[in-house]
Length: 532
Figure (cartoon, rainbow, N blue to C red):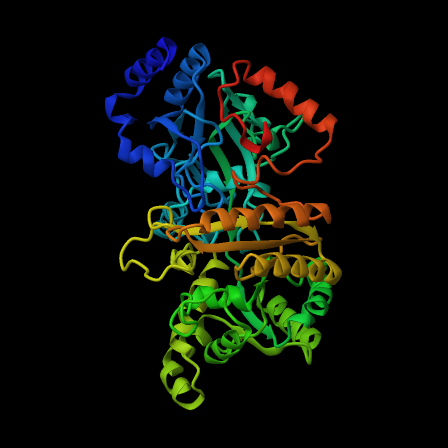
């Protein structure tokens, strides 16, 4: 360690206090661990408690040439968790910046810091008996809202596009300067937070999926609860019927019948959500055979593809949308079911008799349906985390920590225009590559916007089995190559993917390189993140 670097650590302690600067080897090892093999080492972990401390630390980093890698709560499982993209970095964790700074019930917004989690905001709204909904991902309830916004993640409600709901930002630049976007740059602006564009060039997007600044505050728009809400489910018996389903759903997304993101998971996706890998039935062999999958799909009563969506609006709007969906999907899907709070409660009451007469374990299936129902109302849940243990032979009964427990998971999430042809091509690529490498082709397709769909692919394995890390990464690399060569580029990247996605064009790179040189002249912030 150089004299400058030693000096930086001393200055960090002076700014933050010794308790907020950790060089503990065990903690550092945990932060160097993800759900796939990584090779980056960490020098220390610093935990500021205010924006002013973030500014002071970045001034020190710039003056001493100390590389800093920023995380929010470090729950970015499957994309790299807390592991930096650069070696020997000081990890700056923002979990202690966890204030809800401002809130307006009338204008439906909240101002939050990066340590504010999904659970914290939900509990905040509940404690005020608010009529507003937030949007949640299927990740940890302690997942940072701003962390997800910074990676342009998505959820399940009408507000599923998280970055799209940002009304303005406060950003610390790598030099320690403080920047406010939109109308926030004017001290007396009455439009701050409610009109995102401000006046002049719109710059908020520069601070997502980049290393150009540290987001320390966001104005996040919320959604007034609708008068009526209903969720629906359906399935396809044959995997080859997926393109037709996409084609009939697209007009419903375009004309506003489907106002929120709609998710379509394959049989592997649903199975992984309700149970672990059937090691005993498979006699220790992988991947799962079609014959065993067929038996399990009968037990759990799911199809080759399984779709779920939600309807929002007035009672009349939801009634009309229900009729249109029934008419559109009639004869095309298996078991179209509509569920509201009343029917969900009824299903819980009849679950046991239903199993006696049909053999279908409805009680266990409800463990999946209830969280999905909640997510489309903005209710966070930890229930999906168990699926990251798919290939593990044992799942801890207490706190789940996929990084700690050696769960193997790599996400790849390409985007395409919503069409049956694209769905067919994506499924062919995923199925071919993953089965070739011995992994189950677990996929969910989300009608993310009116015109675009996202295909989330998870490569699941057990990191404690020798050779699995290498085999999974080989699968990831080939999958990414096949997808991008066919025009299917991810909407976000894991740290394993950031050096592999090319083709973004020299003018684009030139522009961002110029911006980086201006805002981070010493190159100290999160080097390598998204290729910058």
